[in-house]
Length: 286
Ligand code: SF4
Image (cartoon, rainbow, N blue to C red; front, side, top):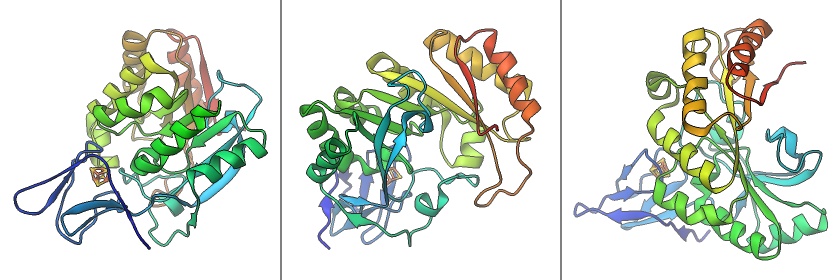
């Protein structure tokens, strides 16, 4: 298979490659992969291994993303590939985000746009795994989709550098961004990432398109009243009271097998958030 050269990298004097797409800021030796396992240094050039490779394509309700204040009741063509620039042990989509043997099928931007039109979808959602590590394909497809009147949605962990974010934002209509915790240590120890870049992406995206936020509440990891209060305070202070917040219930998955989040914990979070935010929802609760 011929790979596509990646955007956003520099060659270091040592011949190693410094990837500039996301804050992992990987320095990649010849023949090696970045943290996301889908970008490779081949002979002093960085290639994306997943350009035009889809692991999953499906027509989903927009509420499944979740987006509740954007095209309510409508369905959207949803597509994702494999790999991720985080390594959360509770990942709900680990079979494509963390398993390198996940199967993919080849698809072009044009085919995806035609499929969306055939299915009468109002747009395309880039979801299931982290869309920013699929950057080259998502950018190209989003540009084409917008040119024919379709809308583009990103369901993302918000872990991307601001320069590539600026390049893609003009083509993006809505985003659901995970705010996994307001605790730097949670991001570092649990996700292998950092909090501040995510907060910057949320603030910038909020100025450019419709955004909703998701917080997966996990027992003993990010469920204290203090931490939930800080998270709500940050949203209120930086985005105001109108951004919808989805608290989602954790269930055991991938490497984490602690019991599911008690529904009472979600209700406590809802109570805290409703004092400041207008739109608070609970997800994964029957
Ligand atoms: S996109 Fe992948 S290779 Fe590039 S910095 Fe992020 S994790 Fe590393």
